[in-house]
Length: 377
Image (tube, rainbow, N blue to C red):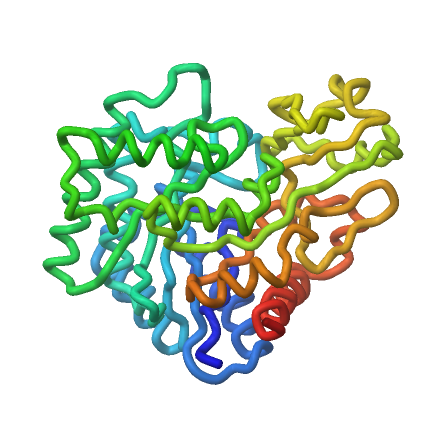
């Protein structure tokens, strides 16, 4: 049996937007997690920098200081979460999480800053020809505009930038779009359709195909009631590069859920797209979980885009989509060698009964669960 996939967690769970906040999280949580999980060798890290931190990293002294700290702490980046451009904790985020989108020059400039920073930080050895990656929005939140030419042109320009950056640094990199409910990329079909359009653009260079790929979030594909294994196989078969697997689970409700069961999950910070499963297997989709839609959910089954702990099995009328992460799925992931990143950004808006552990304890439990799944196959 070969070496196991790099396993880490996404640092978008940590509050704070400045570089000092990132350093504090690395020191207070990430480094102790490394020690708790074995403490030997290099621990892979899924960094998160919003636009404020990205600007601070333009200062060479700041970038050198972060790099030196990571080296001393035996931490190395698998990549950066470049999804939320602005603040991501402590106040309403909702659809602002997707702004600016890929038609906007600010998204392009921000993402370039992240890739440059990534080239200057200690990077994890991902093996299996996988690339350091920056994850990003699934083009845009779908407001009916569809995929625009500006989005396609900006991604083509990003691919050219990455090829040049690879030439300067010798590092292999990939921009990883992350499909999500109610976005322009939200399931296997919309993802494959978009990549085929991108590859047919007159501005696209076929030699750049490995530079624009996907971050595969298991919660998001489960929201579409797609089997994660089949979805991942379809994407790989379509020759779309997969840069990273985000291991996460959505909240699942049964027909026995009551208003009191739903109430602890109402949240003013994040968007919680909700899909009701009909008897014919079709979906009725609601843009957010709010008290107003409860009459549409009571007595029915469905799923809510609310990232819950992987180590939680569910309770009463609520379960999770963790059951979709089967041994066959983990065998496929292990064979692919992809880095696996636990994503649990909703920790600070969990209901009290889900937040009985500290953040560090919760992350340790989820990381241990993922490691056990990969070891068992």
